[in-house]
Image (tube, rainbow, N blue to C red):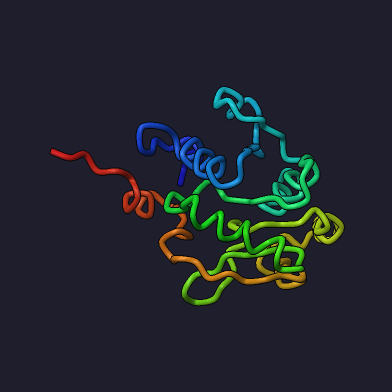
Length: 174
């Protein structure tokens, strides 16, 4: 993208603030994982990644390790189409599942590990993957006792390039 995706302007705020509001609506609480200097001013608790350089795996490990709840909703900051309804569906499935995580899937059935609910019991598996430098989240999720939950594909679309962002960026009306 060439810049911090979380701070892209979106719907009168930033992308991360938009997503934080959606998560707040679905889960009741929000914490951000990242550089406190960049995100502290947004008004949410911010925790530095305990394992920088490990990609999303380090962020998920950090989120689970600082949380006081067993079940934790994890959402990437680059999914502008996510909705509170989708997140509530994942959360509702988590406790009933009897599994250690519930992972959203799109129409192809591929898991989206950055739109999921993880139980704190996943921490040892995450720690071992970090220690062994196995950072691919889809490989890791395949090792967990999980439930895959189909959701609307538009909810899982993420933005990684300026061209992808152009598809989501609100267009001015005339």
